[in-house]
Length: 67
Image (cartoon, rainbow, N blue to C red; front, side):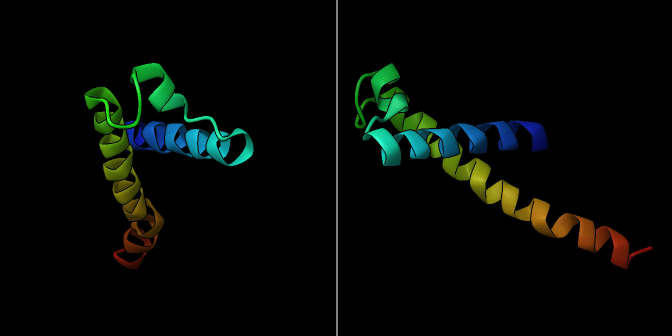
């Protein structure tokens, strides 16, 4: 689950970088626009992955505190 979440988060980061540098939304281009069903699914998955990755920030601290 961690690697999947990190992969989706990286995809989201690359997409946001392309938007900021070139005003090009790769996800929308690949899946038929920002409001297309598949684009919205990808955006949603990136969102959930980002939330999951928040847990990665604190997981190492929690593991050390129980040792």
